[in-house]
Length: 132
Length: 239
Image 1: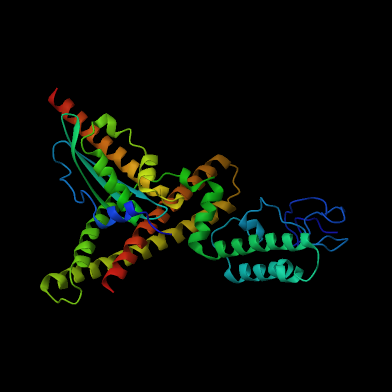
Image 2 (image 1 turned 180 degrees about the vertical axis):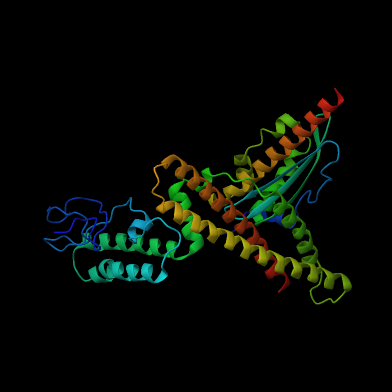
């Protein structure tokens, strides 16, 4: 099975690879895994005034998983927290032309986004309850 | 005459009537009247197919003997020369099921995965807590792997030597972890098998304990996949 050109491009030139400090202000971290294939994905967002100003990822897995998370970070940047929650795995499948056997990679990326958003929301809640 | 269930040469069949001569069949592989091969039930699970209880410790010699015995009846080669198209198709279907059943149950990991699917509907329904520590470890190791790949393997700089040592140590500790996971899994096999034999009246309590074991096994199997993946990657990178 051949990877699409877009997957190969993201794989060879991953965007936004790396990580932020987990406890940094405004940073939300999502770490998820796919027990079926053993892939692990970490996705982080940096939020300022409800807007995602930066995103980073680190993925251990196949080319499609790396491309899915790389694309996700690109899409996240500039979005509001609410908009980010609306990113669907099917959009990633379309953009990267993923074959059916690789759809779970895009699901993993969506899960990672959700996990990062949840983590951010939780941190904000703690912050607001601490200040009130 | 033996009841179908008690006869070792019978299995649940797709139909209760011979497809060829319409006489009653009760689970015999071959029709008692016209000796035509009968189709196995499509709902037959792999354990029943190989005449095994739903237990996780199995006798490899026994399962092999059963497999050969069934193959001697169903192998499509025995029906290839006849001109009966139905018999060819039926024997092919039966033989395929027997083969898959044997290949799946022969391997302890696949056997456990299959049992979980069978007992819990879909293995995906069992959600186990993601092993956060393991994920962190894997992602950290991923950095070392990337750094090693970026370097020149023939170079004997202090940095490359150090990276190689780090990865070798990780390989050893992860391989060890894999063995521990296998040991845990086989312990769970024992617990499951004991529960299958449990005949106490507290059916509900047994059911809850079974569910717990299935969940535990699912967790071990998931972790096993993560660890094996990263071990393979480390081995391939530093070889």
